[in-house]
Amino acid sequence: MAHGWDPDRYLTYADERGRPFVELLARVGAQDPRAVVDLGCGPGNLTSLLASRWPDARVSGLDSSPEMVARARGSHERITFEVADLREWAATAEPVDVLISNATLQWVPGHLELLPALLDRIRPGGWLAFQVPGNFDEPSHTARRELAEEAPYAEHTRDLATPASHDPQVYLDALAGLGCTVDAWETTYLHVLTGEDPVFTWVSGTGARPTLQALPDGLREEFEAELRARLRAAYPRTPAGVVLPFRRIFVVAHRSGVTA
Image (tube, rainbow, N blue to C red; front, side, top):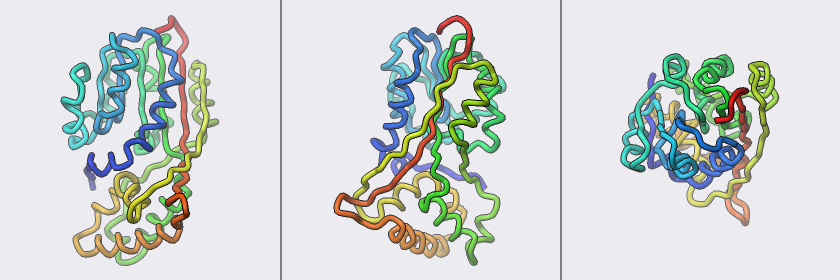
């Protein structure tokens, strides 16, 4: 079952979701790229940083979600946004100088095997930079998975899209083996969240969304109530607020050749 995205819900924690993009972009050494692409651009709020960083570049944002692209269009006069599947893009697109993907590849099954195709879309001397979550063993994900496997939810939640990623060393080895100079690292953020059931608000905009959309009316509300309770137990309120540890994996690969 295909699921849709809600730009407004996703942007609830725009600052927290945007910080990794900024830190990833800071490690990209391209000076004067001609073409820059944001794969999985979402609502486009972060793609605008690429246009600011490289004002003479042709900047494009691609996303498989029509809802996200509709929100992104018109957000910046110099950026073109379009609906596209990144696997098809990787097979057919003209080469670019900088390819950035923020919190997207985890949704692509077997994305490690996709890296050679993505690298082929980058000119010699160009840059590939991506960030993926690395927190899939945390309660924010395991609580949802365990609940979805219980009756009466399981019959509706089988074969859903589930995100996954690898450790930094795996990406480093794969891209170094393809001839790149690679910078790979990880960071665990401690997001201090406020509001009612903030961890549920966070996951309902991303990892839990396919599950929630797969459930019929009535059952969805029951699932949501139980998931809220489990997340409250896993992430109790502290004097600072509700703390959500979030591990993220970063990779910047410079392809050999003439500098972009």
